[in-house]
View 1 (spheres, rainbow, N blue to C red):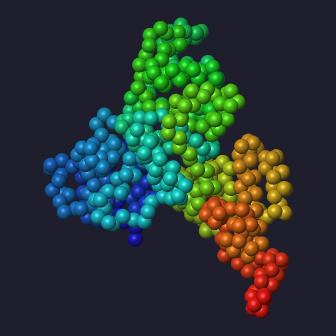
View 2: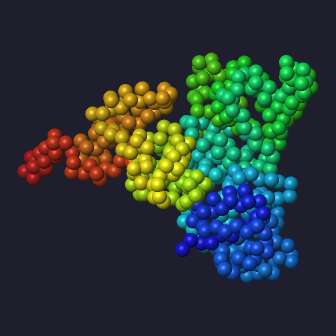
View 3: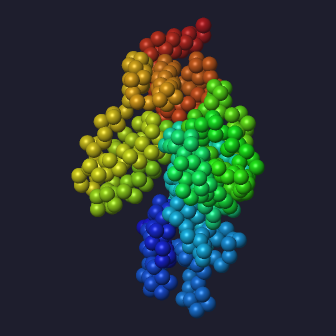
Length: 473
């Protein structure tokens, strides 16, 4: 039976955000709008965890005596003070911040060893894979510093979520998080948005307007798709980030600001530097702490967790009913390559949720492109490459997908030739065993499936060797 959790919070948005996190941890959650309502529910629910909007008053304390499940804080200095960030005087936490700050609380010693199984959600990102854990560990370490951070990864890997997690776990969490999409605006408009402008700076500038850098003062400035930043704007950005000051368009006054800079890109910035499209000195300034976010295909085991998470979040809202996956559907989702990463998975899950009849999503609801596990045998590799080349993927994504297909096909052929013997297969591939095993895990290939299934030549060679040993030749 799932442990009970009771959330006491008058802000429904923040409470629902906390409920999602707790539900992902295995809790059955109930929300109470006030303390009196919560006390009335305590005896019937017997919650293993009680999250309070703020510490109980002296008058309320007697109602909580002997209840070891209560987690409440009075100051911001303790580990569990994250609870106060959900809603304190002068601080209005949005849903993303709420998710980010509830997570550390769940690991509180106040649970007295009664925690449910390990959760799939951390820092607002869902998953339990080693690849994601490694990236999130860097996110937490980097968040404590004031250094500039460069988030790298393919489109849809969650770079903005990681940026928000960095902000939420930093000392700047109570101030603004300002996001700028460098690819969405032409150079002149982007400059005006970033630096602001004075009245009369250009035609139509009827009043002065502060820039996004000023709005991020004391908080975090997030520059998304920084690799698309126009070359002409880069020197001004470099000086602003380095000196923590800038001038508005048409202005003469120097404006000081204090914002931590986090940038993200799906481009190879070092290659952009070689091509003359990105300033090397700006790259050095932004790339103090690089963090690589793994693509979904390398997050082994995370696809089912993410799919269930997305389904839970959209089924009631989009269809008015609770839905679940047939296990076969989850297997098909797990086998797909996901060139669009988490964003693509989210859209596919929502599409199936809306179009599926009944409470169970079955294989007939699966989009055509996902209905079959791709054939990665050598005989179809060339055909697959041609298909990739004609698709809508960019060169980089198409290249990655083809290389992955080649790796899987190559590994299968070596395992098949050597009847699942990893040592011999690795030696034939001119790879060490550790690297070979890592590639097998990456492509979810089990050597046991190839035992006794080697090629005729391999079997004949093996039989000959065994026969010679028997004759002591």
